[in-house]
Image (cartoon, rainbow, N blue to C red):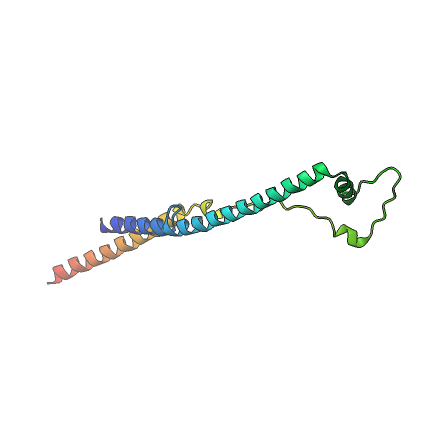
Length: 141
């Protein structure tokens, strides 16, 4: 009977520290939350940059023409000459990062069950050995 209690205690302790709602998961969740807020800040800055560029494009025909040329568009009477350095000059926006929290995707319950059941079996066998020795010594005496 003690072996079952010990197995249950081991399972509870493992789950408390290493489980999906344990202390280690909480620390990883706080780090993930910080990454999310940093990503949101980057996206807000990018949004501000895009809004200001949109406003400039809306009010300047010359800027529209320059941006169109950067994208490879030309007027009917123009000839485009491309150079190798011009390809690297384009300024495209990065739209943020994809954040994934893999820690919560993995279930650790099978591992915890295996450890706790294994521990319970070991203690059960130890209790059996101690009980047999006690009975054997009792019969001798």
